[in-house]
Image 1 (cartoon, chains in turn blue, green):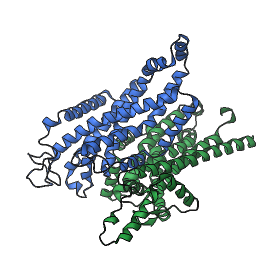
Image 2: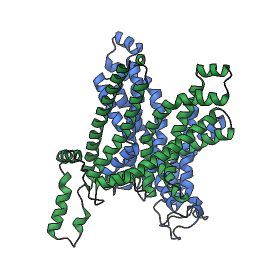
Image 3: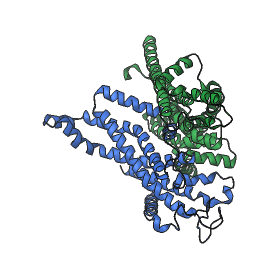
Image 4: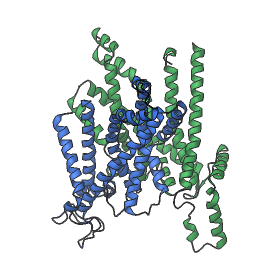
Length: 268
Length: 296
């Protein structure tokens, strides 16, 4: 991985973050505003990416969609990492019976394809909820259900620590198990959890995109990258390449995140 | 020696069988619970049909009330399933046995073709990349692997529709990055082994070295890798089948979940859990059979 590619990746991610933070200033209008122009019009000076089927400005929707995806995904990744830390930590420092039970539950979660779990869990909730609630629920489920996979990694590190001389030494100094877990364990788990967070981030973005593409993710009128990509199902996509703008944003962002992860791994 | 191996194998088989059976039952119960407590469960649009009289509406209500008590539903479902009756899908108006029979073969074919193609491409490109035969192949493979892991499976389904390709190409693209990355690492590790260095020092031809000493020893690990990729392939098959409107198990899973069809969701969850766990159990048993007694 060359230095310039990781610099370009970082620059891209900063740009996307800036778009999401300054969405209100960048967007030409609100994502719900229906213009008087023709619906489904091609790009023009007033609508950089044209308008959608009900005459809403595509560029504004893309900017707001970037905000929704970029701001919700880290929260979901944080939730995923927290679940992994909590479950893996308890399993790693707990008794053998507790460890076996927790790991069996994790394995059961892992045995079901993630997408199937997401669809089943998402379908349980009302589909006609408020758009913001549906977006929050989508990302919450992605974060919650993705935890067990990462929990195994955390559990391995926590168990290694519980069997280490460091823990034995701490206990021999009279430190209580609770204090050891609360004070000594978090710094040990921090590198693993940080790595898991960065791995979880693209997983959350791609999970939301998949759910939205099959109609179970973020609902209209709220835009997200996944919801905006739905327009690509049109058979005349080849004659309207501007519809691929959200695809480009999604792929470029995930690729940049991957390049930085790879670079980080190489440095370690 | 032989009896030791047999004992080990039978123990592992029993352990794996019990694990798969328990997980399948638990998975089915979890699926049923999700559907039972979902919003809109028990609602039937036929109740709004003005052409039906009160007796017919009552019959419709009675039909839907079967799953209201989760425990009794699950017990009676298991009883019927043990006799080969998987129930009836109200939303698709067909027996579940028939639905599964028709759709399973389609999804199985799609997954087998997709996985086989992905494994062939990944193996070939891993070899080309490792031997630095072509820089173009190296960068091309890394770019393809990097980009395809960033594209949602459903979008690949759309791409298949657009270029009129079979949906298994989308499954291939979804599983290729995982297989390529692991196979590259495996062949690299195999090439660094001491016996490969010794074989090279003895002047064995490069092609023979690559095939016999580098590629062949990675086969058991590659097979194990394939078993873990089944879950990824099925996960990808769900959105792909939904967007390409392929009447397979993935689409059935989506339909069962989104229409809150309790018996159908139960069966699909059990099948998916069984399929994925059976492949990982096969992997564990093969490992037990191949392991040397002193390593256990």
